[in-house]
Length: 459
Image 1 (spheres, rainbow, N blue to C red):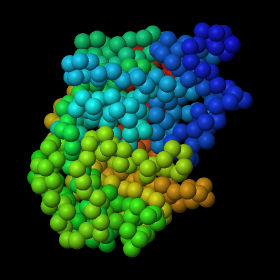
Image 2: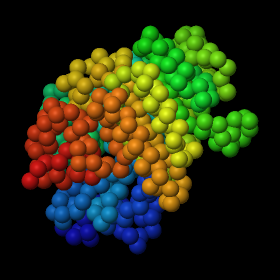
Image 3: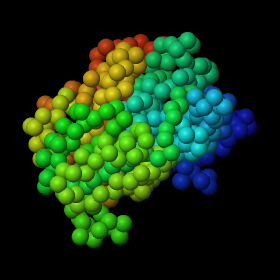
């Protein structure tokens, strides 16, 4: 099938390099990524996805799949191949029972939250509303509701996807259960998900967002007290301790501009008045520099970080590692590593796990073992290409230093630029990886879907 023949049957839009709209369509979130597909297939429905997959397979084109385009490694766009862009497939439907939400594969979390929160419901998403649902949920999905309701992938009830042979299949606990297991943590290795079904949960009209900001020079003390508080906190309390630098911005007090800080961003998933009482100790670790704590709707909460990570503006290199503990020597190593960061635009966060995340059996989903108590993410952000080497080298150096405190696994939504021969196998661990490899051989033996956190099928 030629591109002209594909165009005759295609309901959406096919963009080639000389077409209007091509340049804008190929841009993804990480400003380091500058790739030019031979064609961008902007699909309208599942039939378009089938046509695009068949065309790419028949013409031996590399496939990149775009949902929100937010993955730091830039997997959503390729050089010379076909970008299958789902962004126009973004409808969200809530049935009258209010216990499920049906989400097309190109929706963002803003689309989902906009459709569910008017009914007082939500399903666990991430922390940035512009993130694509598919990219986040298929690899895990760590958000504010994880303490009570788990990861995004834990809330997938079913999925419909186009496989490498161009078939539309459904995966659930009763249909293709091996594929259903693999989709919940195994990423985009097995096909292109065109529809999700997620569980919905009741949320209160207002939630408590607790966000005191302390000077980074007190980071060892504050991080220690945060660790001790989180150890005894109820499952409703979900949060992270985040290192950053206050920008020169009128939104912040001028005397804080340029200060390196540690923020304790915390959400109470329950009545806001209760949350304010429960999280109050976090605001009493001495006098904070600033305090952004407030009661707010969940939908507002989900947009708080959006302005910090605008599409295409910044250059980014993010890596993560699961921490086996947060002992004093671990905290000192984190603080020392962050002290060396070359960019004041950089963020780094210690994420607390436990609660519902930890209660799910290791073999229940491809996400695997849940016993890690914390995760460290190193989120280098900078502006100039001249600073690429300094920032990527810093992340790699600190990441390597932290391995003595790590479980040896990592979160594949923060994969650097996807480099590393053992990146994926180490992230899953040997048992999960071998199981995923068997399922990959069954559904994608030719590794058509390889522009991802790839489970490579050996020749």
